[in-house]
Length: 332
Ligand SMILES: [Zn+2]
Image (tube, protein in one colour):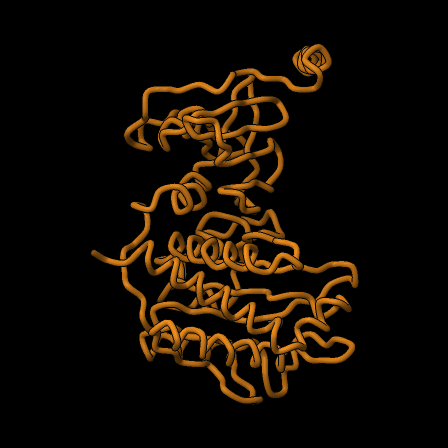
């Protein structure tokens, strides 16, 4: 309590900005095993200053925000204690666990160090491969309409975007297989089994979302790693599934695709990167993502999703994201 009072007083004196440690450089920490860890809330946390040093970054820590910055001072990542919302390379990301501020020291969960920071800040942590065969999964279909809007059904929008994405990927030299190419029912199990059978090297599931009418924007999901809770819960699951082999690559793939979507489609809010244990992501033997291309429960977004021009923009951005992913991880 006293410590809290001192923080508040200092914050007032410094105009609300409490800089415990000014941006500073530490000798690079060469291995994550050399990063000091402590247990909080029953799980392992890594000391933030040493995590920054490991990535050869400078850092600043205040009671309300932790930052990693380049040697020249450009922001790389921002974290808030007790909040799972972070920004990494300008991208909103839901962390697996909230960072914590203990005894004037910032900590980040070891799970996020491995499964969030590594894939996004250190390319060498990714599995190298050169994906040329892409599986496109148009969500829902047949007896399953998906979300129902005022003028359309999700299953038709996902198929239209999937068809557009197919031609954009083929233009870029990829081989493409579709989990469905018409309006018929395909189970979730059949979708990943099909991808595994044809040995697809990247799996992209296309969906549109529904929520309250004011919610809109585009977001991309990858698989929740082992030992972590999905974005919308605090329940930790430790079971391992097929998709976990590609956990890090899948997060990086979601980043490449979402970055292109956010960069190209300025009219839609960037809803960033989230992780969930969707069946199609769990059971697929390759990097896998699920793109929520917009909310058909939002009047404007539903209208846009029903135009060929907007669907083409989305398809182009996803294809460019896959190219960016391939160029970053291609085996030498
Ligand atoms: Zn859906």
